Amino acid sequence: MKTFRWSIPLAVFIVLLAFLWVGLGRDPREVPSPLIGKSAPAFRLAKLHAPGETLSNTDLKGRVWLLNVWASWCVSCRVEHPLLVELAKSNIVPVYGLDYKDDPEAGRGWLAKNGDPYTASIVDRDGRVGIDYGVYGVPESFLIDKSGVIRYKQIGPITSEALQEKILPLVRELQR
Amino acid sequence: MTKFLAAAALVLFASLACAGKMDPPATEAALDARLKGLETELRCLVCQNQTLADSNADLADDLRREVRALAVAGKSDDEIRSYLVARYGDFVLYDPPVKPLTWLLWFGPFALLIGGAAVWWVVLQRRSKMLPKSEPAAEAQSRGRALLDEEED
Image (cartoon, rainbow over all chains, first blue to last red; front, side, top):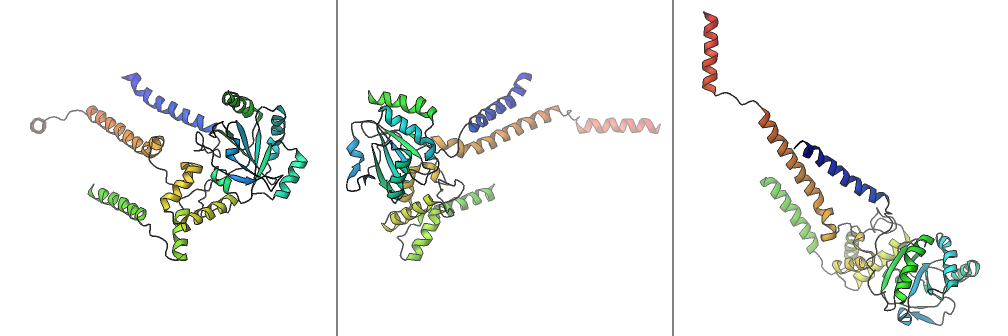
């Protein structure tokens, strides 16, 4: 009975500690997306470099692809950009860009200056497709599998850690 | 207790009354009022502690526009809410739904309250056991009288 008495507060304390510890490591800005495991929302948008042509999500059925939401006005896009250029060079997975709420002219200029990692970029001028994808903080990236299902979402810049430990292993698994 | 129950019933019915009113907007002003109400229960994703109604963020502008378009297209408040939840998750709601994932959120405080009450009850029980048992009153009186008598002698 003696040991029982102090073990209850101790247990409560440990549980509290565990909650706080987990909370420390979490980013409150990262809201888990309800879209993971669901079909990628449909879109058909004009291409940035060929405004007469359009690209639809259905055009990409049958392959694994990365949708990267970017904009010329987005400061943290610059952080992940070299990584995307490198990824594009490696030819592991095609990267498609969604130029989000951007002036197409500014978007093209930005890519000319910083390098263009995208197989194609499409223009989401008014951000409607962004809303369908639950975009709230550019950059964001979605990994979409062969059947068009979203398998992973990166909120904020892709870090080399996220790329090596999460995205690339998942790409390999999905490409099988 | 009855007062508490009455208060609880009032709160419950008040919230039901709010949930029930969903007439199609007759005028622009009515639509504005309805959207204002709806936007105050939706969270702006960019500035997380602001409602959609209060936020100046670009995304909040877009979402307000989207919400208005849906309302004009005749969608009910619930349909608009589920439109946003499908895209951004329950986090957009300031009033999260009760489901297994949110049980801890909803019932945790009550569990803590009940736990606290149980601890309090147990402590009270132990304390009352520690008090010395009082002697029967009659016996105590006769003993007292006896003591007084002795002094008088």
